[in-house]
Length: 331
Image (tube, rainbow, N blue to C red; front, side, top):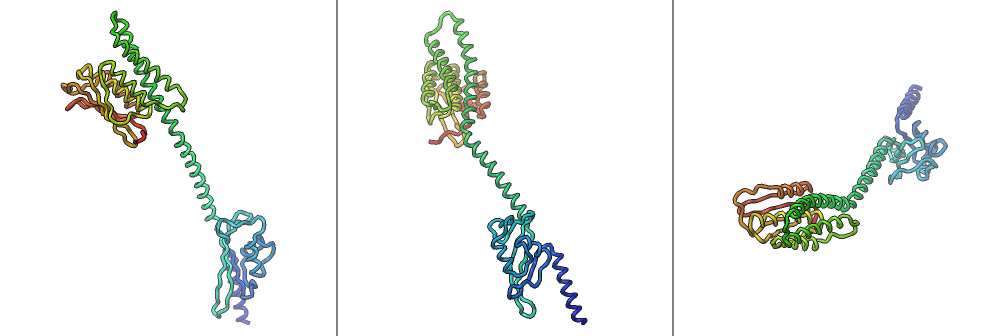
């Protein structure tokens, strides 16, 4: 009698302990008959099958073909989301007791928190993909953005040059005798400004004509007696081309006015993200440190305003080095 009571107390204690587990667990003998199951497993099985668990094969069949409202989660076929939203992972294993008897154990563990983290990660990945898509769209529009910035730089350049030309034109008109060559050179400069404004106003599909710009520059400074020699490829983008044109014109004026020279050489070097231009002349070397007057100061403001830099060297000869930003195709 005492032994029977101890066995009953032992079985009751085990069952109570199993019922207190948050996970579902059951055991079946070699014939598949369920000999022990806790309350959580009974609840899960009733949701899975619509009836109490009697035989282990009933549970395995229900997991193989879950009812409506229960779905397998991800690639792991042993994980299921139940109608109330919880996610359960079922595992099957074989165990043996001290007497060598074999049993089948099925364990159901609540992995809802883990899969919620997975859902959060998936949502974050989707958000990152959307951000990447917007970034790719932005990169696709970079050419348009750069073109707008270049057009702004050109308009700024034209505005400055028009102010300078207006002053020159007023001074020349105030003179009684106007040298034909000076009138022709001034007319060319006005014509160039008109062409520039027309080019900026065209549709984006119109290509910038680098060769034409170089030819006009060469012809323009030839009007004041300066020959131009260019080593390297002239810029293929309008913003860099017009800034370089302004620098060459300023150097041409200073070559005639101060250095008494007649030739200008432009050395062009391209990097992946910039264009470097070194401008020299065949005239006299400066007597001392070059002081930037109105022309060079205005040129520096224009170049630095476009994100570039300018360096003036006085010894051993005059040399103007400008660095212009922007991607130029490397030959």
